[in-house]
Amino acid sequence: MSYWSVWGLALIMALVLLLPFSVKRVEEELELFLLVMGCVAMTVSGLWNWHVIKESLAEPVKISVAVLVAGYLFRYGRGGIEGFIIRLERRLGVKHALFALITALAFLSSLLTAIIAALILCEIIYHLRLDRPSRVRAAVYGCFAIGLGAALTPLGEPLSTIVTAKLQGAPHNAGFFWLAELLFLWVAPAVIGVAALAAYWRPLGREAAAAPNADIPHETNKVLLLRAAKVYVFVVALVYLGEGLSPIAGRLIPALKTWQLYWLGVTSAALDNATLAAAGIVPSMSREQVLSFTLSLLISGGILIPGNIPNIISAAKLDIKSREWAGAALPAGVALLLIYFLALGAIY
Image 1 (cartoon, rainbow, N blue to C red):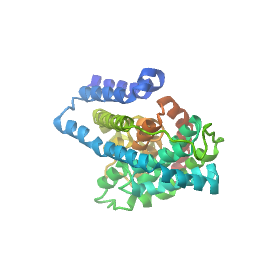
Image 2: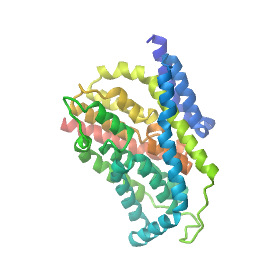
Image 3: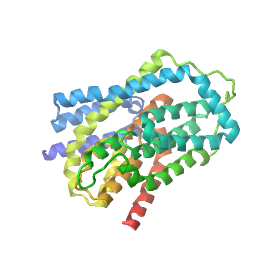
Image 4: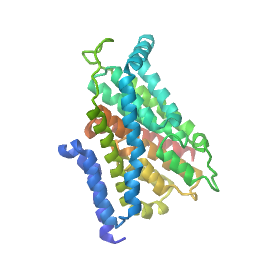
């Protein structure tokens, strides 16, 4: 790859990180912006081929269909969901109910998948009738928790599927529970911590109409289809971005030390953490390197909307903008990254 191509890809990465927070139109049309940037990255890298195009069109189908089907199921089953949440809230109170639900969803997401867990999270937040600041905070920290918990099995999310597949041979011989054994003691405190932030960090505001019998707005077919389409475009864009920027990762990663790998993982906030896992995880890594890099990817993936699939789904369903997401996620994400960096350094 030429010198100019490397600098061109670096510029694309910088634009992806900065423009959603500085240009309102980009923030409002984030999916299309990322799609354009992904196409430009593919062009600069010279990686266009039919395999990538077919993959980019096929990979988002399952996610988009899941979002659409779940939307219809939740629309027709909202009475039961509402009743369950009202009973739980009366028994525990809204703060304890939110904490318990996010914690449970996070650990169940490794079996339910992060997609289904994120859709359930959105329904919970909606039915709790939180005001907008509380809704954004609950969604952001809930997605942090789901992104962490889903990584415990290959079923949970693309990142864990990729890591397990790449390490299933010698010397790691990764099986179904390999990631759970590697990550659980590290992930569990973070899940509980972000769930506590969602529920207890600040008072939870409620909408003025937060009454048990208040009417729930009916989501039309157009709304459900548009949401699924936005998720589809988002995932297509991430496929192109990940593939287009992969030459940089391919050059950097083999030469990096463990602590450098950890901080490289921060770029997954804008690239989708599964993409960097595919580029960076190799069997020759030590267990310490796999742990460090994977933790960094999982934490960083919660910081910005493109970082992982739960973020994308929740932002689309709850209409959360890039600046709102980053404003809530950055303090917690940076704190977690520093805490885990120090903890890894102390142990290893």
